[in-house]
Structure formats: C-alpha cells, structure tokens
Image 1 (cartoon, rainbow, N blue to C red):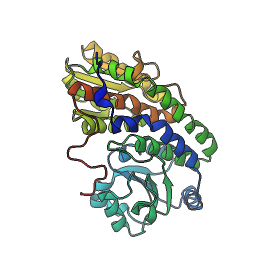
Image 2 (cartoon, rainbow, N blue to C red):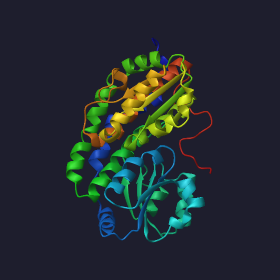
Image 3 (cartoon, rainbow, N blue to C red):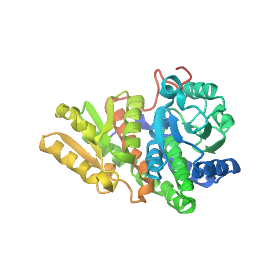
Length: 348
C-alpha cells in the first residue's frame, strides 16, 4: 500500500483539485451570445452540409461525445484531428462546412495553420480557454471556458471543454435549460469523488503494483475518457498506456493478457454496457486482470459518483487522473512535470 504521497503535492494535483471550481465557473458562463445564436439557427436551417469537429490531444478526444450526439440528431458530423485536416482533408474547408474547433490555448501550431488555410471559408465555432486567442478572434462564434491557468497536463481545461460541448448539443435540440440544469450537477459530483483522493490513490497503487501494460477500453461516449486517459498517463508519469474500443481489444491485444497487464473497461452507455461487462468477465476467465469503471464498481476509486448520464464523460476521467497520481508514487516521479513537451504546442 502507498503510504508517502508527498511527491504528489504540486501544481498538477492542485489543478486536479480545482476542477469543481472550474466547472462551476464555466457553467455560470454558459449563455448564448448573439453570434452563437445566429450560428445555431444556421445549423438548424441545414445551411451546412457537414459539421467537422477538430482539435488535438485531449481537445480532440473531448469531441467524441458531441460527435455522437450530432449524428444522433441526424447531422452529418465527423471528428478529424486538426493536423490531418489541414494536410490531408483540407477539401472540407469550404462554405458548406461548420468547423467546431477546440483548443485550450487557441494558438497551437495546427490551429494557427487551420486559420491560415481556411481564410473564413468554413464557418468556425471556437471552444477555448483563452478569450484573447487567435482562434477566438477569428471564429464566427465562440464559447469560452473558465478553467483558469493550468500547469501542464490537461485536466481543468478538458472537463470544462466537455461541459461547453455538451451544452452546444443541448442548444441545438432546444434543451438548453434542462441540459444546463444537469451540467450544474457536475461540480458537486466531481467534488464528491475528489474528497477521497488519497484513498483512491492508495487503492489504485495496490492495483497497479507490478503492472507494466495498461489498456483503457470502452465504447461510445466513453472513448473520450479512454483516449484522454491514455494520453495523460503517458505525459504525466512517462508510463505507457494504450486506448482503444472494447471491441478492438478483442481483435489481437487480448493476446497480451498476463500478470503484468491490466485492462480498465468503462461500463459506459447502457446500450453497450453488457458487452463491456462481458469483456471484463472474459478477461478474468483467461486469468487476466480487468476492472470495470462504473457507478457500481467494486472499488471506490473506480466507482463513478451518481449523476445524470449526460455528464458521465466529465466523471469518467477522474479515476484515470487518480491512476496518474498512483503511478507517480510507484515510479517516484513528480506527476505532470514535462521533460520535453510544453503546455502549448507551437511546432508541427
């Protein structure tokens, strides 16, 4: 069991613990501007042939739940990494396209190139944490989060972007007030989980001891946490983790099951929850190690707080943040201290 957690007491942990306040500030700022209302009306009138959602890193992964929601609302929507969009799919940058661009800084290298190439052809909705950024200035409409300054690894900015993106989907289907009421529950749900962060870290430390290979898997909206979780584990603790869909894990990686491999499976949306639970059992039947992340998880660290399903993507990242802290203690590394990366990536 982990006993000495002093290595964790730094700016990264502070950012994690500030997430409830960041979510509360962002929720209070969610109000449709004239420009946003005009853009939403254009979408409703089917002025756009497609909606392309774009970002990099955690900003890209955060787009997944909204992409699925737009498809459910029968819009033609696809998520594309900005780096791929500007170099290989630039034909999307035309007037029938609405771009939903997420960037914490609003000035990363790929976003800057996107704005240079687009030249106001495709309409842009910007979601950013930096209101004075190039992206915010060039966009047709914007939604500014209020995450505050962040040390390194995306945590506050990620959950606040999820909140803003979810609200945009609610606006499109004229359920903004009901949606906002549900989003307002996110800060307290996150705070409830984080109250016992030390217990979570110790519990996960015992689970992760002697583990060398980590897989995070899920389906549907849970792929946001899956992708972001693997990213933040690598960048915050220099420990390798892989993200994929639950179905993809069966197509080959299941061969890696051994005593040094742990698979975290997100129960996720009820539509596929049984498939995900079955995967956990199948892994255990093969003497592999697997745990389910859900509201009914056996361990408290992997148990999500009770909350509306609409804010599940915000809550699902929390156990993975705790994993970064547990791994930091196990490896003796200060979490979130970059050796090579920077908070804003300005080189392609």
